[in-house]
Length: 349
Ligand code: 13P
Image (tube, rainbow, N blue to C red):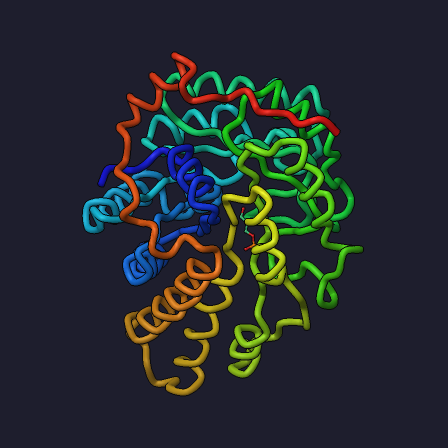
């Protein structure tokens, strides 16, 4: 199957009432792990690359790997997404490479660190939407600012510093015409999200519910949604790692989100932990080994296990065969003739 428009994939998820995991990739083994999990669970999937990943792997290597994944798995709908594009140019270059979706993260200035004004965010996001939709490409925007830093991108600090204002979310969706909306509800990127199991004082699911109530048809995105399970932390620490005690986003909170408009769930840290734990185990137990395949194979399997588990928990499992990818040119026509609605339905307060 050719790469799928993320908009199509999310519209289908909304119809089916499930969420879709968006898993970060940097290399071949991670792409293989995701595809093996998607095949095992019969799931549509979003594969995403940050700017850091594109720089690490080089654009062409990474994109050709995704094309190989699509060619080898014709039964699986795959959307290829730019995670946290910091500028119009970053999004444009991803679109020109063949990505079917981009995140224009205008919540931060182009330095990827300083929070931007609402007006700046609207302006750059709208510009990305106009360029992308003309080419049939999906756009995710962000309103409010996530906590933490991922691959050098992020305002840092706690996820509670710039929580999304529901009224602004409505205005932002109306002014930009984004296909998917990332909101800040107290989560942050990386392993250190919460110092204890999060409750409503730090994980603001009430804000998510309020936004969904006002924007019932808008696809919401949860970033920073690794669950950072203790068993994965324990493996890393058992074999020489030094992770401090930490908590992520409980899966049941994500499932509550999915029942309330969340269609895309970003997961990176859990896979990093799974791979690192598996690699540490091999090197700790058999220090005489030096063939990278001896530790990359278990690392790939450990990531596959986590991804397959999330696919089942998010509800995307079993949905790979529900639909065929519409050509991206058809999607572009849909944006042009208004059949793909971008004006959000806004409900009264
Ligand atoms: P985690 O660090 O929680 O996996 O979040 C990843 C993410 O949101 C990528 O944009």
